[in-house]
Length: 335
Ligand SMILES: CSCCC(=O)C(=O)COP(=O)(O)O
Image (cartoon, rainbow, N blue to C red; front, side):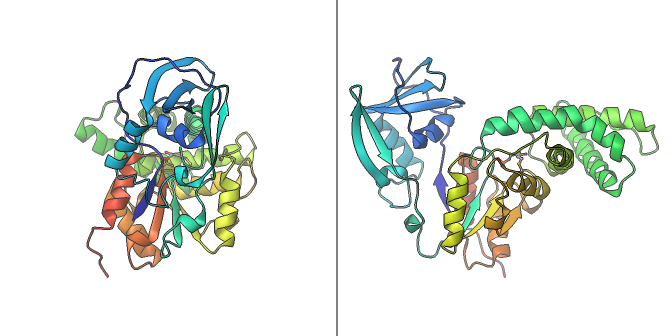
């Protein structure tokens, strides 16, 4: 599977210089996100790239462009390949307050290789701001999980959620996972059971665990939030147009997220740009495999019916996921 790197692992700051932000470039926003500088923005400044936080406070990092280029190259981000990187779509170079500002078009479908008619999109950090997931969705799940379990305790759905959680916690206890709390036996009092389940869920959310047991329950809790309009999903402003164009040009777009398939449908069905599900051909979650494992991308490719994982272009902000997707192309194809 080919991939488009939206971020890279953190690099140490190269020069202890302070920068000043006058303009931002969206590509390097993704790059600097990989420095774990949430809200960081960047400006292409003369020979290099200066970073600052979005609130314009100074940030002690300067990364010279040739070093960045070199680093990206070692990460497999080959700027000479037309599908890789907005720097090939440069429309203009301008000078603003003595600084050079590069304006570039977003990745166009013509940049795809002829066989890549399938697009696979991650959600958090790719179509949707990380802050929406961590500051809105996760707190909503944390604050409402008790209420949800209490209200739906006897439903088949919640019984299945509890069964999955119990199995996960038992496994976690065996593995010595910090924060795992024993769940009382099945015939325990409802309140005792809910307290222990909620405490485990809280720890799992805190640790940002991408496990099916948590993600399935979270999706069910969020469903109420979307139904009552307490929640509205956020996608980046260029997402609806990109989906529309890809759809119109015959590309098939799929989602692969750690969030459950039900949660993914809630996100794209209730976004700040309306219902975007009409542009999507399907959804994959952790039930097909972990996003950092190559095998998962092979499984997805096989269920899409393509001849090889290299026919699928995967977009993510997580480096290990991109590498796993790339590795899938080398795995043995089973029929
Ligand atoms: C389905 S949206 C909820 C996102 C979520 O729970 C999550 O863990 C994000 O994972 P992703 O694989 O999209 O980075």
